[in-house]
Image: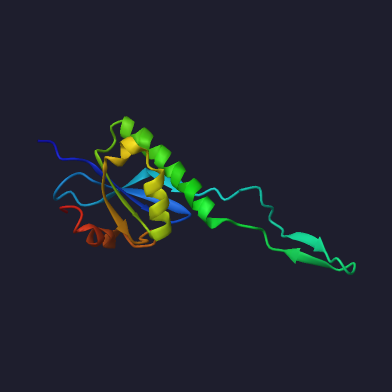
Length: 145
């Protein structure tokens, strides 16, 4: 019986990457082609806006409105779309989703229902900045490494 290929998606609100597991004893390997970065260019300029005071000619700087939840959802949708294409191409059999609470929720919600059947587990941890050598220990309970 052929070992199942499992992709582990490790994400936070601004970037994500894939580690692959090809069965017991294979460990985890990074897939350099499967990386994403969030695109936060939602039309905001580099400079804050300005506003006139209603009682004088004074002007004040305004903070741009940023909806981080919406940005996480858009980024999660971008990742889920790429994963659906990779699954159709036969690149993996199973998924493990790993992210902090908000991003994990956005990923789970964004995954296509057909692709949802491939999700083997979810791990609620932000491991994006974890050194690659330390990643396997976080998935001992999920995979036979």
